Amino acid sequence: MEPRSGCPINAAVEVLGDRWSLLVLRDIIFGDRRYFRALLTGSIEGIASNILADRLVRLVEAGILTRGTAARGQRARYSLTEAGIQTLPIIYALGNWGLDWRPGSDELRSRQQLMRDEGPVFIEELMNELRVRHLGAPPKPPDGPGPFERLDAAYAAAAEQEHLD
Image (cartoon, rainbow, N blue to C red; front, side, top):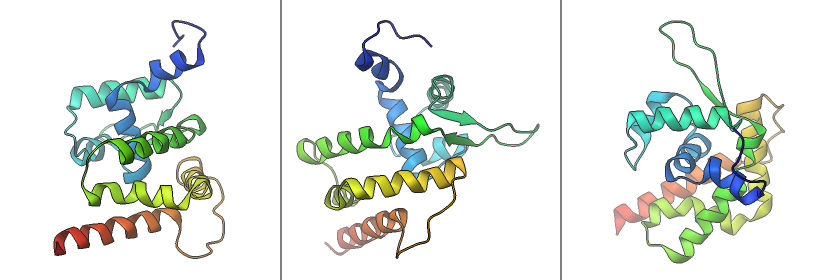
């Protein structure tokens, strides 16, 4: 897909600039939802199946995702490419803006707050873990809980606190 102009911002917005593409990427990155049905039923925003199908095709065509081959009757698995993994800093920046300027529940904001508190080193750890999960990179020996385990723990703690309040 050729962008309408040579402007790099335009080129990025043409691929990532709609609401659903970024939310699909969020769910693949943070929810590890790699199959159509998991993306459809796991969307807290309620994406329609036709929109999800369209966004997945667009993201594959743009080189952000790959679609695994599936035999008849089997489900195709989506994986991030390196370009898809490189969207994490963009999603992180949007999340930080959302923390500062938009309301939300403590539970749903907890992961973003952890990423902000941990900083750029944590984002790089997440990207490395995504390379292991999606690209088959060799895992690094753990030095304690991994980044996704820490995100899950932050979410669980916030959910427990909301339940107590």
